[in-house]
Image (cartoon, rainbow, N blue to C red):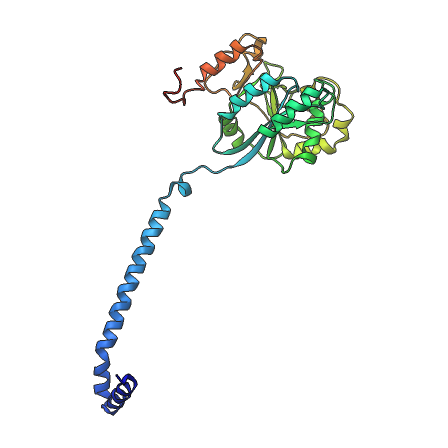
Length: 310
């Protein structure tokens, strides 16, 4: 077949036609092109509309809560308190918050025994949740100052808030996060104000059971001569004193009655367990922990299994 010759002949015939006939001859082909283009465009528009509709309905975009802030909880404890540490890992390992990134770390001073160096090295390898400060283990001789003042220099990133907590307090992370979510992100001092009957967070200081500072105050403690020259004494009282002397923490919040001491352990700082609890302090015995955890039904998500009967 000599296709090029035929094409050449057809073209010559086409060109010899009158102009009107040439236009009429091309109309069928033009109509086919227009119809095909319209058909393909219609398919494209429908597919895009369907994709947009499906994307808009995706729960991830419209319904998933977004992380609003970050919080570091440093639990001040002792290197030898292995059992308490492992227990608290269970307590906080089953909790989470939809609105906050919360990291829980265990904080103590320099290790002094060979067995500590071995066992705690294993803990770090397994959990990576330990901070070892450059200090001698103590309660009221500068450990809290060393904790706050060291963080800006040793952490890989900053947090919006930093909390100091005791190892005998039970913190409920989601209520804590919800409470902090509506608070300022700077110049903040938050906790349980002492003395116990007081509701005024601007008088005295926050209890050492667990108090929160915004990151700018942590940085201020690191740089402050006021704090550096006054580190011996009740650590929670000292923090309040530093902030008062430095004219800091204009945003102060005492979260009573959601934070309190275990019933019957500390006079007017104690009251019965309540559903809106954020922190329960002075849990010294296992039966106290058991009562608290049962009250909040912390194992309610446990599913039935053939592997165990509980």
